[in-house]
Length: 54
Image (tube, rainbow, N blue to C red):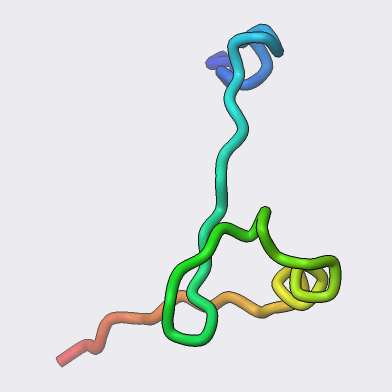
């Protein structure tokens, strides 16, 4: 059984992941959003585009 590396890495060696998103034509880190915009970002629905079969 393969263990998840997240479970075995000590907390002091872990790094936070910075999430960026496109807002009003430019990219910004979500960490700089105000409380309302962060809430709106969490409510967004994400999709995966399917390849066209020919």
